[in-house]
Amino acid sequence: MPWRYYYHTKVGIHMWKTVKYMPENLSETIDLTREYYGESWISDPGYLKWQYEANPAGPAIIQLARDVETNQLAGQYVVIPMRFKAYDKTVNGILSLNTLTRQIYTGQGIFTGLAKTVYQDCAEQGAEFCYGFPNPNSYPGFTRKLGFTDLGSVPLLLRPLNTKTLVTRKLGSLLGSLALPFQLFYKVKDRSDDRYEVYPLTAFNLSAINAFWAKIQDKYPIMGIRDADYIRWRYFENPYRDYQIYGIHKKNSSELIGYIVGRCTEVEGMSSGMIVDFLVDPSVPDAGNFLINRLLRFFVDNNMDLAGSLMMPQTEESRILKANGFFTCPKFLEPQPFPVIYRRLSNQGEDPFLQLNHWFLTMGDYDAI
Image 1 (cartoon, one colour):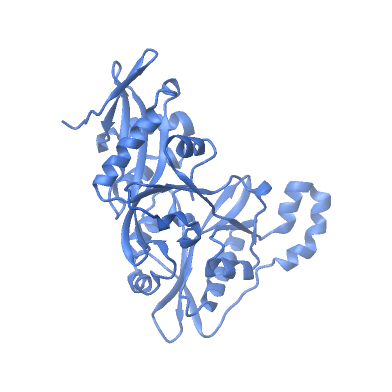
Image 2 (image 1 turned 90 degrees about the horizontal axis):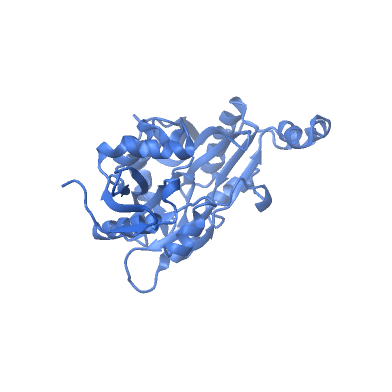
């Protein structure tokens, strides 16, 4: 039998049961998602097949809720496996995403019931923890009902690229003309150095990624594994998004010493270049300046008004970003907060994962950008 029944509950006139997701259920989950988000990346069949089925860490673990009488899909709880290097060990985690309950079934315990079943499945498969970046609507459910701990927030770093446009949009054309001095200050100047070469990374020249990852995998205590399989899946095989990816090496060597990933998008009505991932060899931090400069020039060439990045403040990469004109976005200007929530799936005494300043996290560690 493809369905596994765990329990059912009755609230009002509705009764539901827990059912294991199968790939043939994808179209139903898409219909459910479209009720919330319409036609978007989160309801695109190609995107979801990529996310649920092609992940090198393993397929998504999903539980569905079905109405016992009508067989209608009432809700879903989804996690995808994510591999980490943590404290000198390879650790399996899961990332929570795409959680939905149909409106007429809210208040019936579907969210918590499905989640607990998923966590049990994942723990049996060797996953040690679940983490996520919830939006404001789902945050209370995770922290109040599912026992997640709020570890803190990842700062959003910003850098103006076109200050006149930004000021005009917020304050009007008259004051926009006063932004000229800032326009000159934030102008992206071409930076180059005869010691280094920055070049585009493609799906066909990732051979240096594994050696780079092997060298820097212990740079921070907790890091999502960024080997060639992950980089290829996350940035090159995504059918819905285009990423610009640069690597850097010394002129006399083919050894990769850093990479940066960016994407042009729109945030709060502003054309924004987002730095999705950024990592450099600690022995050559100067390399980070040239990677940032090349990506910012790409953003300017594509008429982006603003650059942004999520980066933990204790990291070398954060210091490099700030040295290149980025600043921490004030809370009142954030499009939304970026909390990191965490739940242990097994009881093993003291938990070192609870210290957010031990994590290296970027937009590349979740699915929204």
